[in-house]
Amino acid sequence: MAVYKFAGFWRRLIAYTIDNTIIIIVFFILSLVIAAAFIFGLMSGNSSNVLAGWTDPAHVAAITIMATATYLILSLAYFTYFHGIKGQTPGKMLLGLKVLTTEGKPVGFGLAFLRSVGYVVSSIFYIGFLWAAFDRRKQGWHDKIAGTVVIILPRENEVCGLTIPDPQPASAVPLTDERQSEAISREPMQPNTATAEKKDQAADQQCGGDQKTP
Image (tube, one colour):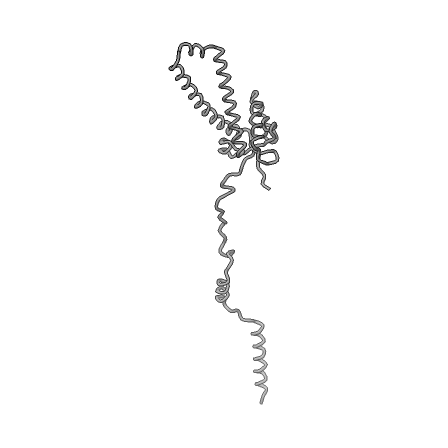
């Protein structure tokens, strides 16, 4: 049974920073599109009245709330999608991390959404994120809420690829039937000492008998 280590605080922080950077870039692009639409609207209508309305403090507050809500929805959608479909965001893929349930099963979209909502709770003074640095299973508050853990996956070069065995010494290489027969034929024949001794004794007795014969 494979045993995976829990991902530590710093590795998870780097992965989260990468993901948050991607979200900010997407949010910035959306903001540019909205700003371009606003500018074209000013150019096509009564720009003075429209501009006065957009500079109103109440209107600015509404825009700020809408921008915050858009960023929050974008973050929820980002983390829910990637965690739900694969258990890995682009940041976690780069760092070799994966989100699973505490039983080691895929999280699915339901738990992924609950975990994404848990980010909001963990963002309160960032205590929920810092909690992972001291927790025994390296769980943040969002992990506690969703019942998930973050593990470190083995490196690809450790789990797949070509396996090359270590070279064996020449003496340890097994011989085929042909080589065995060749090796046997090349070995010098060792005389059977017991048979040779018996032949010598018989020859001596015969010689002795011949000498006694008149």
